[in-house]
Length: 313
Image 1 (cartoon, rainbow, N blue to C red):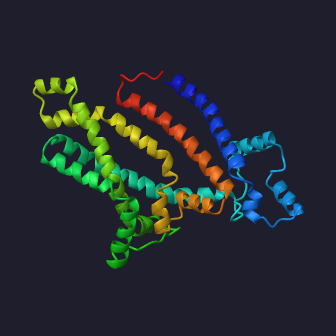
Image 2 (tube, rainbow, N blue to C red):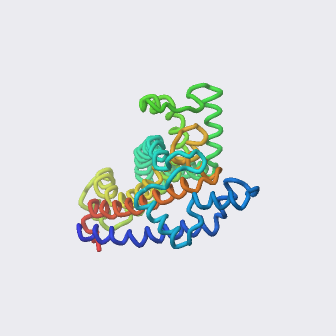
Image 3 (cartoon, rainbow, N blue to C red):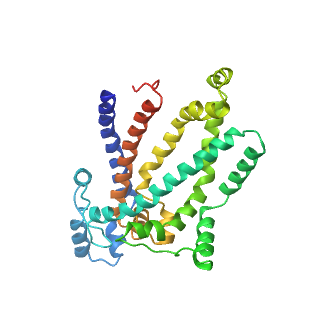
């Protein structure tokens, strides 16, 4: 196990270098000249030279890449072009709201979708299974924007059950019980249908394996077969789905953050894109890439814990 983890950590180094090179190429060759984006085209040659020197754009491409690599290693991307605040400090202040929103939504979705999927798989082929599948298909065909806009208007504005938007920087309790219930409810409505269908498909697939027929032949009841044997073997795709979602917890749910005024990473990324704030976009891109590699390693370790037959090579 330890040797596997060390080998995977070493493999992350060339992967991260590839991500850094891709980001560098995109921002330097595809993204355009930042001096024009920031200051417009009415620049004197002296002003342009001054701005390019401040941003390190007057150096050669290898020197610029080494400077970018240093920023990644030290996690110091300088100041935001839009606000002139430290990028690291800005992102640190945005991670908490995103984790609170997306983390709560992930837990709520898991403990809602998985029991429903198990129940539907138990009644597979019957009226309940067909009805839930139909409802999930219809729900998945509706845009998430419709859920958010209609839910915000009806539940927040028309009925006044929840605040339409807001955030308290000083109180987690107020955020959890005042400002987050409506975004969490709407986020759950958006994500519940695909999660139920995804989990149900793997549970039903496990029910067709030979070990299930053997367990039934031994006289085990259907609930015991389902919860003791099938569910554990079906946890591997569940873990895969969760660990793939974990890196994006730091981004939160961008649409929910935007519509409900939550000052999270997703909202910050959208603002950075609107203002062409390249240092912030670079920092978020590198952060998500590193988190994705770390959580992929965590998923492999969890596979071994769930099923000892899994060989880590």
